[in-house]
Figure 1 (cartoon, rainbow, N blue to C red):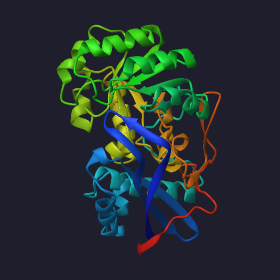
Figure 2 (figure 1 turned 60 degrees about the horizontal axis):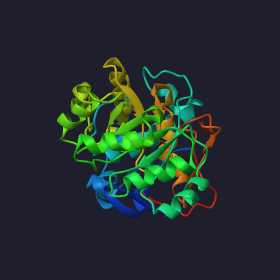
Figure 3 (figure 1 turned 135 degrees about the vertical axis):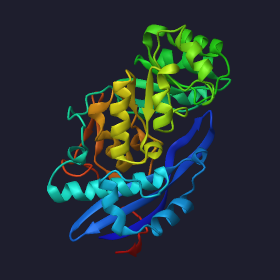
Figure 4 (figure 1 turned 180 degrees about the vertical axis):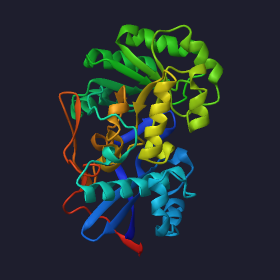
Length: 343
């Protein structure tokens, strides 16, 4: 088994704004595992609010003992950060399932195999009002539209979106609100019947505000930043109706699948999300689509230099083109500077 790493920066088509701030792209570390003529790929995408850097992940993976790869398949933690483990384990599952001529999802124990029929989303980041129409025109036709909120322009943004787009809305404030009134005002402008969900409206530690909001609206409230691991998941029903699971938080397909299973046992809705990953990261997470109520895997339609291919959206459905591994392949001519680490 040979390991190679590549540092990369995914660049947005338009600067992407959330309540966390505005950025032009996201630092990434790609992983390549090779065994004979078979290659598996993985991705660690690292938005600045994670406080885990491209360099730290690179160093973690550079120092990883490849003899410990077997522990990933057995579910034993190899002492990596969640993004580093996610990248390495994705590459491992990709390689192993390709070797068997199967999909990566078939190797995940207990994962339902029901396809990718959950409703899909694409995301409108914080935008100048005169830019909203252009951005909407560039997006594929998803089942619903996710709108980033948590700024002084929330009301104007929602009114503009309602005039331009007829899709149901999913509202995401990224911890940007401080009162239940703000959330109820946004829901009212969007039209409660047209809102399929509201994500992380308040600071991650304000479980009390999330619980208060859930008691006064029928809109499902999803936890994102508040749900960082299994311990948070176990208490999620105190304040949330659903959870947003992401590979960079969960640490791999196996742990994400286990958290999705546990969320369902607790009566929570499951949303599969991303941190603006490429087609590789989003396609990998789409392997778990059979566990999902909502799919928020739109990174490939937000970035302009995706080095991978194989994920597309047609008539509101997410489709993976490949049938083995995670179904995603390196794009011909992709400029990745692979650094061979060892065997």
